[in-house]
Amino acid sequence: MLNYVWLAFLVVAVLVGGFTGKLPELTSGAFEGAVKAVMNVVLPLLGLWAIWLGMMRLAERAGLVQALAAVLRPLMRRLFPDVPRDHPAVGAMVMNMAANMLGLGNAATPLGLRAMRLLESLNPNPGVATNAMCTFLALNTASIQILPLTAIGILATTGARSATSIVITAFLATLCAATAGVLAAKFLEKLPRFRLESPSKPATPATPEPGALNGPAEAHEPVDLEKIALPPLTRIGWTGIALYLSAFAAMFLLLLFPAHLSGLLGQLHAGWSAPPPPPDFEGKSLGVRSLMAISLLAIPFMLSFFPLYATLRGVPVYEQFVEGAKEAWGTAQRTIPYLVAMLVAIGMLQKAGVIDLLTHWISPLLGAVGFPADLLPMVLMRPLSGSATNGLFVELVQRLHDPDGFVSRLAGTIYGSTETTFYVLTVYFGSVSIRRTRHAVITGLTADAVAVIASVLFCRLLFR
Image (cartoon, one colour):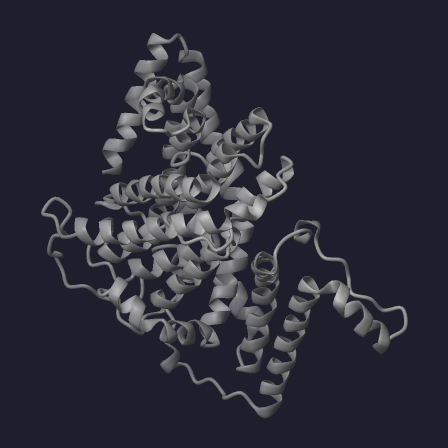
């Protein structure tokens, strides 16, 4: 499917650019896309991938991932029946989905790449996306958002008094999109066109082929906790964890009730007062502040708790972190060609004016059904480019001079409930050299379409 989509992008861009006199811009767009794929996407993300893949390794070795997967095993068994219930891919997918729900994109992507690598270790047909991969990608492109931080931040910086008003609409829209994405994936995988062929050789759900990602010296085996002798936590260990969790609970309360706690802290120590909350917390309801506080504390908590817990379980944390971080370079190497191919095509589409042309054609039709025509460029660009959509969103809100208006809130809801589908598919499938994506593209675009429709319905219900 992605083969035809990519070809269509190139051919349409050249034809439109040729007849509109934009061939020079189209050429520059192709070269800019190639440079952007390597210099602006992969290299800046390489360090983040190393951090989170290292942390994932620690969480696996300490048994945290397996424990989390065990809690959600009934749900994961229904969503991913082809994945063995104790396989580490289950835990990696759970961690990725949790990070996505909290809006922690810089943590979610490396965890998702780790999950894809583990799912590939179960793949009897290398190069062909499995049912589990397609369902997992559907949940990524239509991830339920508890707090759409980027959209809230854009509205806040453009002067919105109630930037967090889109929290409930984005949550409801992503809930609908995630449901539609999973149902579409389950339905399409059964159609003859997308049905998996019988493998030429039986599946070997053990380790990935040595060197498949990082070279023979750096191939890592999925962790089976039952095969690792971990010493139980001692009473001192449990006490240390309890104290550490109590410290983060205190930080949480400090973010929510700084004024109330200042007096208490002053009684304990003269001149000691609670630190001021972040500016974004001002004027927000308790529920919204709670979500924002959780999101603010989540990454520092994971970066410190995983190594602490692993140390208490007898894991050599520095060595294991480095081993996990090594996977980042191999992942980046395998992702670059796929990302270059997609961003070159998207750059050509943008420079050729294809999005502007589609906007001009479709606007009258959407206006007739009550969809604001101002939002169409952003909606069309969203599956292709996150940075371009970001720019369109900011420009729209600034042009309307009404960041608290219906159109601005609808734009924020759509932005927070949709995903850069082609970018996600390219990065995740490219990291494990999947060439035949089967129904993943249709599933992702279906989820995006449902998210847009649900955003309109919920925003009309709550903001009109």
